[in-house]
Image 1 (cartoon, helix red, strand yellow):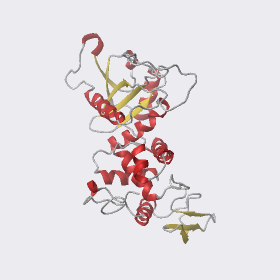
Image 2: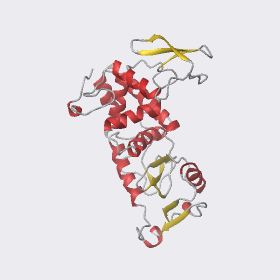
Image 3: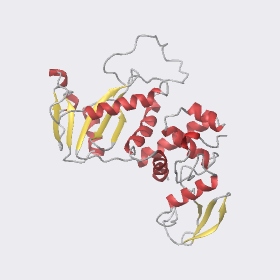
Image 4: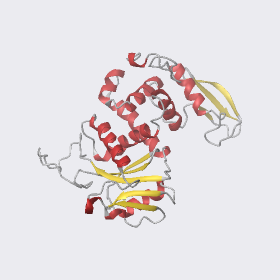
Length: 307
């Protein structure tokens, strides 16, 4: 079991105020502070008429609601509820995942099975998919890239054997194991990344409607899919017809920079299953959008977000 990592000595953290890993008691205290920062509320009826009612486990507080008479504790309704992994191990695994560490290595460090760490990753990405909702505005660049991602790690009798040196070139499709990833990037702001099972103009319009404020300025290349983005001030580069890569303030260099970082992020996984690619994108999206924070503050922000 890992007790601390020497590279983190001297760094302050809400969880441990010193070395990693934190104690179980300190994790419970911080989670309580983050979850009930506006006061304890009943997760069922949202009443504030709540009284303490003993302990749950060794460190978590138990409560009783005087309105609906239900009992709950600090972990009720969170991704930590029912987990057999200690809080300190869960927080440590989240920290290492944000550091781009492989799940296999994390499982070795914690003495847990690979399946247990996979469950932690899945819980984190599921929570981020629900709560990490970005609304971009101002100047937004839109671009797409294509990644090789198939059925890694699955036993599929219907899948034809792979042949080395025959990778699909150019634009791919989800069905051909080269899924498109669309990026919406606000200049000096956040990013939204989506895997497109079927890349189309309708997909782009739905993505913009969900994540980009009307009236924003959109920058794209001249791929026909980006034509007629109604509701946005649209500037296009004649990239394919005239090899134009920038025209004053009109460019998509920020989006291409994000793709470069993303591919470096994914490289350490040595391949990703296409049906699970979105999970890695969510972790990358969170890390990028909170890049101005130091590692420990970013970890605290992640914990507060998923509670």
